[in-house]
Amino acid sequence: MDIKERIGQRIKAIREEKELSQKDIAYAADLDRSYIASVENGKRNVSIVNIEKIAHALKVSVRMFFNDESFC
Image 1 (tube, helix red, strand yellow):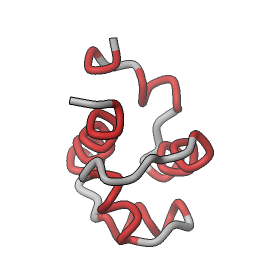
Image 2: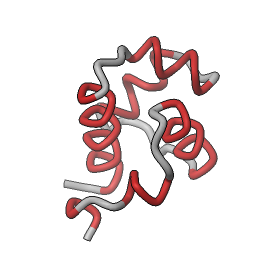
Image 3: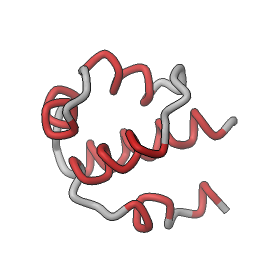
Image 4: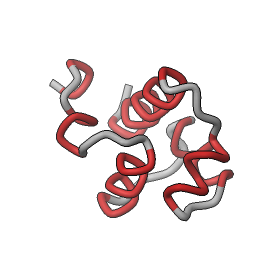
């Protein structure tokens, strides 16, 4: 599994844990819902700027976002 897929899975896992929709995250991060979907599916090479926006929308720090064994 490549890094794009791991990031996408992490976003999806946190989003689902918080019972948020892709639309909720997209709105809070000022990104398009289809962009969030493509990131979650590992289809997009997401920038660190957008990772920060998504982490903020998920109400987690970037550090907490990457504090997962899937990134070790």
